[in-house]
Amino acid sequence: MARPLSPEKRDALLQAAMMAVAEQGVLATTAVIAKRAGVAEGTLFTYFENKEVLFQELYLHLKREMAAAMMPGYPHQTDVRRRVEHVFQCYVGWGLDNPAGRLAVSRLLASGRLTDETRAQGATLFLDIPQMMEAAVRDGTLLNAPMAFLYAIIERIADTTIESIEKSPADAAHYRQIGFTAAWRAITP
Image 1 (tube, one colour):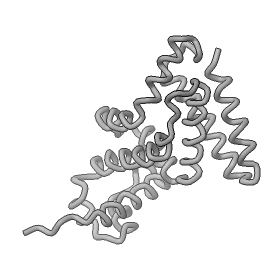
Image 2 (cartoon, one colour):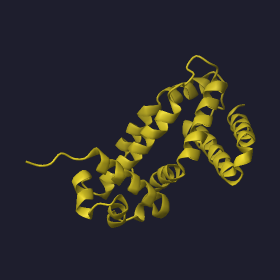
Image 3 (cartoon, helix red, strand yellow):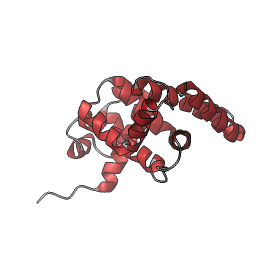
Image 4 (cartoon, one colour):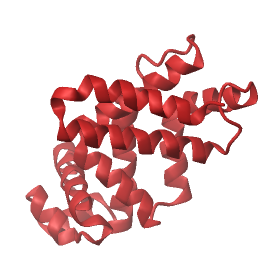
């Protein structure tokens, strides 16, 4: 009878993969990931069929962590500006708390190795956001632009905000405020 899989080992492998992808991108080897997790390389394949499956699972794991930081407290009944600010500030907070996770997500997305199904699964965790953004484009609150373009603007400014805070933590509140102001001005007519 096979031994049950350990959630702790799976988590250790995902954490090791996150750090390895943050440092080396998708070129990180399974040997490096397993060593970081403190397990044999064969153990990694007990939990993840192959490196591609590991990367898909890592992406979803990180998106779940991001959603846990962003979606509780999402202000459904407030105006668009407050909802966008909630998303912006929660993303900045998550990014500051998880620099390796933020970098790993970015590298996984840029790698072209994520399946459409994995991307779609990750997006389901944030359904309230695109619904709000699409409605705001329709009613003229936000620029009439493709959603991917608007998201990219917000994300780039949020990433710049995170990087600025990392360089000057004492100015965090100031950077958060001017970062959101810049993002809002960039996506509104």
